[in-house]
Length: 318
Image (cartoon, rainbow, N blue to C red; front, side, top):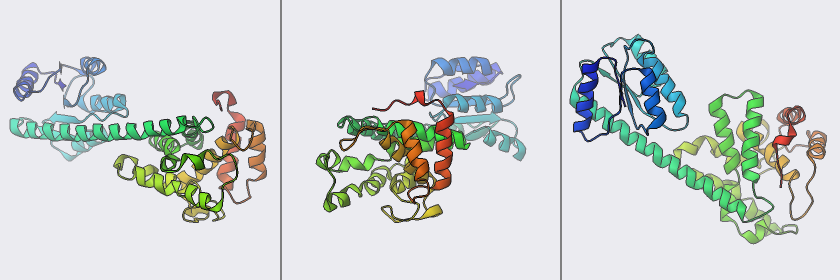
């Protein structure tokens, strides 16, 4: 998509990109550009900075906000070369700049480079989707854990919001909640579905799942922020957890949060070895055992308060 309020400039860029074999959508202002973006799959946007009304900086910012999780590279075309305007462009989310009058070859080189970058982002998103689908498939095999990871992910988002975390951290928390048990994919169904107490060799196997989960997700750079949550969600505040026997604040915050939510969801859900508890019973037990050494006691207290003040009807447990 090319946006410029000066018609000759717009036509020149259209000709350059069409000759290079690219499909072009043109707009002479922000309103028309946003309309195009709403109805077409735009891979990259080239925006003139000095436009009347909504300028290129603000349009860049809006496109980045509207795109949400999808990566859309933006190039700002400007005659302004001073540091202040470059910084303004970077703050708006611009990926690159081209100066007027522009060199055609330089512009095309930058465009092709950013399109390759977008393709890489799309591939990563696809890989993420595969991993998330595997989690859903894994849980679908077992009636007792079906929906567990999705609920933990939703709870993580709610709890992060209650704690005042920014939006990007909420997404990380939610992903970590959904993927925290992905390592169980590598374990025997016989162990996972066993209705009786596990023997020592089986306990050793089940305790491998946090490390296995970390290994599954590690190749994706887009998931690097959730790895501590996956690896350490079974650590205990008193150091008696696994796999690394971390204690107190040495346990990553994301893992301390997941530990609380994972336990809560398990307690209010059916399991082969016991009936489910009510939310009220579970919160009472968690308050009673808040200083037992399993969880971060301060975070646990905050979680209990959140669950007491918010509508419990939003949660549905199997």
